Each structure stands twice: as structure tokens, then as C-alpha cells.
Length: 514
Image 1: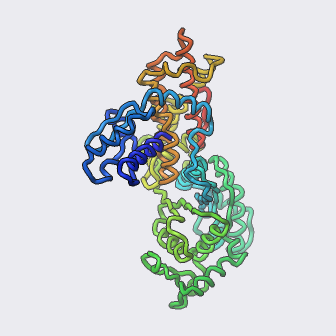
Image 2: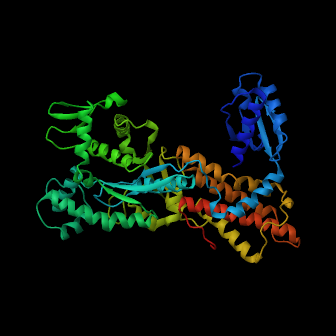
Image 3: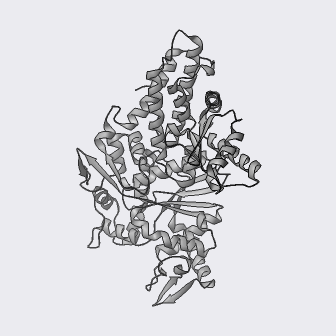
């Protein structure tokens, strides 16, 4: 990866010059006039930045990957050489679907849990956002070298199951409504809300949630039922452990967890005065269960309504002597759907919430995935139905898929081709700019594996498509010049590989014709 190569060279130069190692930051330059990459290494040393930068520059000028360097305001700006860029095409063609892979994850065992919606009804828009983001993050972590498992936690015990039972029975304590509840009422008979609720959960999970997950293009490695924690006495064991370690106490007839000892804003109830265990009790057992299975990192994707729950889960992890960095919680903000400039609040079919299935039916899986990924998980998302359905370049999904289809058509027209040809012929600014975009993918993967900002992927796909379309317009790819044609076809082939790899990470189809 070019960024890492530059960083290694800078750190080596600093050590040779000053006998010390520094945490130099290497970043892509915000403006082309400032080079391709820039570093603050000179300022980290806290001496004369200009003088230090010049000394570092004098050593790095020997590198074949750097064409030119300049010192500005203490920063060292790097301009990549044409020779280095041209050589990257060979690497992409050689690595193919492996291009972008990294070992930064070091084989770490990661459990990523997402969706985990209560099995009391169909999956909604909000579940869709967490589902797509979780799935894509898992793809990225695998690409970054982590051993990643996707997990769905099924809350099949507790108050919500009983409420579902009341709803199916249709008594005065009914909470859930909709066509699916009416259908369940026809199939399930009885007056025990807990029993009816458990039966309804199994049906909803099998006939509604799992089929929706499949339509979303998600494959979970494990569907973990909360009831299993009680059946295997794991909830009882964790409560016993907390009491034994003086981390729980009784007050007002309830059992409380000393979560304030671990940064939470107040202590939390584990067992209510009526003897019922809380979600926190089973969540504590579930957390320990995951670590016992050998996972080194746990990632949770939760809806915005779970924001206040973050502190107590972190506290539980701390109480069990796990490090804070071993548990990451991503809060997914709300989704609003717009059509004709107006917000769509209810399903046209049911008059209730809009399901993820309805959205996929309306815009297709590719658009649903892409649009849900375009914003940071922590930002609210406005989903434009009209834009998602457009078959034009205004629709970013159509635009990036069209770039891939255009390349496939071009390569088919060209017929048999050689691997690279004379790569030194690729000197046009649009050719070099395209190569610079292609080699960004490894950086995108490593950065996202670190901070989980999956919105980088759709933006990168757009940037790459823009660069390819510009190359296509500015450079005649198939011409009478055989050598130049082969070189440009190889660049087009490399572009197809990187676009396809990006689509695969997003779980989006890479069409060969449109």
C-alpha cells in the first residue's frame, strides 16, 4: 500500500537522521496542487519544520516511487512518479479479486452482531440500515484480515414475547397490530399469552425475518437465541459471579449491578422486585458467552433508541475484566423516506411502518444497499425514492454500475488482449489520475476496518467511476496504435477488477450490460 510505503520511508529517514521514531501521519492531500500525499513528520519533531523537512526530503528523493517533493508550512508533500503508478496496473491484474486485501486485522476473531430486531414483526427501514451497514462492515473486516462472524441475537424471551401473545390473542393488553397479527390469530389458538407468544415468535422468525434477511443478501453465521442462555443456566451463572465478586447488591427487593463503578451514570437492575430478570442480566451472560467462544473483539450495531444502553454494556464488559477496546457499539441513526419531495411515513399496503421488503421491491437491492451506506451511521439518513429509481447518471448506483458495464462492453469489443502492453505509454493526466484512484482501495479498507465508517465505500465507488468515465472521454482506448491500445485496455481491465471488488464489498451486483 503506497501510504504505508511512504510512512515506512519517512520513519526510516527520521531514525537515520535523528535516531528516534516518531508517530508520523501520512494522509492523502486534500488538493492536487499539494501533491498526492502529505506528512506532518517535520512538525512532530518540534524543531525547525522547514529545515527538518528539507533534510528528510533529501533522503527520500532517492525513492523511485516519488517523482517530486516539496516543503510547505512544515509539511512535506509527495508527488508519485509515473513509473510507480504505471507499475500498479500489473499488481492489480496479478492480484485480481485479492486486490485490496490486508493483513492489518492480524487474524483477530471478531463477532459482529447486527439487526437483532425483536421477533415480533417484520423488519423495517431502520433494521435495513443496520443490516446493510453491518454486513458491509463484516465484508471489510474479512478483507482486512479479521476472522469475522456475523450474528443475529434473537430476543425470544421476556416481556415483548408476552405482549406479542396478547396481540395475537387480541385481548385488552394487545400492542402489535397489522395483517401479520391477524394471520397469526387464525393459526394460533389458546389463551396463554406466553405460550402463544413463543409460538408466534417461531413463525415470525421462520416466515418473515429470515426470508427478509435472505432478500437483503445477508448470511448470518449464527442465529443465537436468548432462551439458550436460560436453558444452559448462563444467566444464573453470571448473576452468581457478579454477587460473588461484590459487583451486585440488593436494594428494595431487587438485585442491582454496580455499573457506576465502571463509568455508567447509575447502577442498573439485574433482577426486579417481582423476580423477573432484566435484559441486562441476559445481555451480561451473552457478552460472556461471546468471549468464551474465543472472540477478541465484539461489535454491536444498535438502533438510535438504544443509545442510553451503551454505558451499561461497557460497564458489564469492564466488570468481567475485558478491555474497553474489545467492545465497540455503533449507534445507527434514524432513516426517513421521501417520495415526490414529501416524507413517506407509512406503508401503502398495510398503513403501518414500511418494511425492508417493500423498499427492496420498490428500488431493488443494489439501490437499497447503496443508499443506506452513503451516510455515516451516526448521521440521519434521508432516502430519496425518486432518485433511487432513476435510470440515469443522477442516480449514483446507476452511475457506478454503468461504469462497470461500459468497461465490460469495451473489453468484449476489443476481444483478445495482452496483460499490460507497454505501460510506460500511460502518461495522460486522466490515465494517471485513474490509477491513483485504483490504488486507494487498500487504504479505504484499512481505514474503515479501523473506524467503521462504511460510507467511504459508496463515495469511493463514485470517485472511481468519475475517473474512469473521464479517462474514457479523454483517451481513445482502441486505436490504430497497437501498443497504446493494449496499455489502455489493461488500465480498463484493472478498473473493472477494482470496481468489482468494491461492489463485492458493498454486496452490490456488477452488471456486464445495462
